[in-house]
Amino acid sequence: MPYLPNLGKVTIKNSEAMTMIASSTADDEPILHHFQFHTHAQSVNTQSVNINLVTFLPNIKGKFGLEEAKEWPVTFGFNAKGGMDNKQFKEYFKINIAPLYPDAADEHGKRVMVKVDSGPGRLEVDFLVEA
Image 1 (cartoon, rainbow, N blue to C red):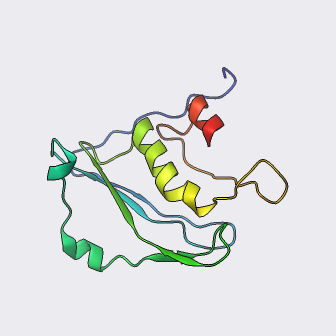
Image 2: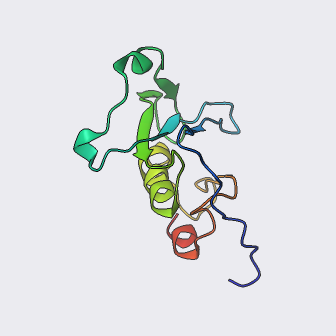
């Protein structure tokens, strides 16, 4: 799609950076919080977060596109820079956003619009079609 601007550029991160995603819906429900930490771990088995952090993070309660309200946990991700690339953003979207609206469809009353910044993965045409 040549008419779309190429805004999805990687931001500069130092070794102490992290990304936090927090937002709300148009109905003023909080979107699930997500923290993307930096790590030097070489495998998923050696990644870790101090458990004390989790004790201060409440679950998010919301109805979103469901019949009844439900509690959702805060999620975490890790990589060498503490940010998100295309693959990690898609994974975040599939795990944190899509389940909130299981009946989303291209029909009246079932459409969902997600507004995000211009970071990596947000303008990838194949992902936009899938989402």
